[in-house]
Image (cartoon, rainbow, N blue to C red; front, side, top):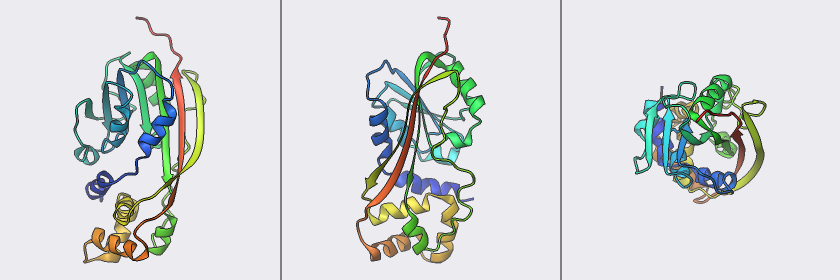
Length: 238
């Protein structure tokens, strides 16, 4: 319902956790020429991946998200998902998935990764959860139906087609400003409607930002990060 508007807030601010997590994942050098980012959203995860490979292809099923993606050399976008990847076989050196695995059938995904990836391709699955509970309670955001079975720690453990390199759970601290917190809250379409009703007929973003500034202008917020790294084990006929 609010997809276009929430996509704009999503594009306006996301914490720099993609870069932080990928720095932890890709500690060793590798021959990463062509990358695939599944569930790329507005492209921030693609931008982080460009540091590690020459060209990144971002795919996402949401046209609203892709319409907010920033174009830059070395990145191309496709309207697709991980269960039907519109790429030729044996063509990808590294795959990243940031918070998108929950929306995919993992068996179908593995079958597609087996098809499009090179025999030694790396696959990184990662996600993060920002603790906004203080603001949820202050603005009476109903979180009773938020989860929908969503699992930030979901990964690809247990599939014989890939070898598990590591699984890590950790915490980092963020220091967002009031306007950044407002964007984080309004980027979630589960919360946008509630906040819009509270501040109607005023501009919801400006009103929310002012309310947050009345608490403080700088905050210290915890983020839980989760990442897993795998390598393809299939043998490809060259």
